[in-house]
Amino acid sequence: MRREPPSPSPDGDGTSHVPGTPLAPLMHGRVRLLVVSHLMRSGATAFTELRSLLGLTDGTLSVHLATLEQGGAVEIVKEFVGKRPRTVVRLTPAGREMFARYVEDLKRIVPGL
Image 1 (cartoon, rainbow, N blue to C red):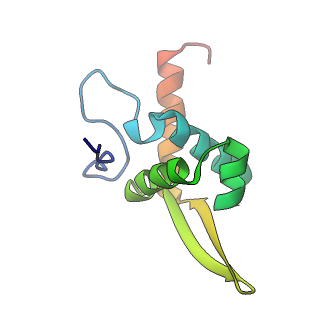
Image 2: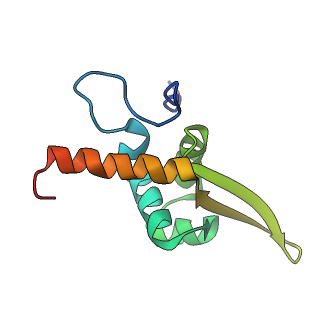
């Protein structure tokens, strides 16, 4: 059975509307959290560089980027450098906001973080 990526919340903020689950599922997945953390720290990054830095396969990274893009957290831009295609991933302003809220949620859950 194929699992569909989580739908963004109606207001597009990636938060969960299930009581008792304060961490946004869009950000909380291990790979997605690694991707967003890297993009927050380093800015826009080429797909191939992101894949290598995080030690992921093309397929795994593609699936998680699609979920983040659907949730409004990242923008994926395909461009050409000379005659070579290049895919660049960058956080959207909404993605930065979602990450900041995720970190605040973590701080509420883990005092002293």
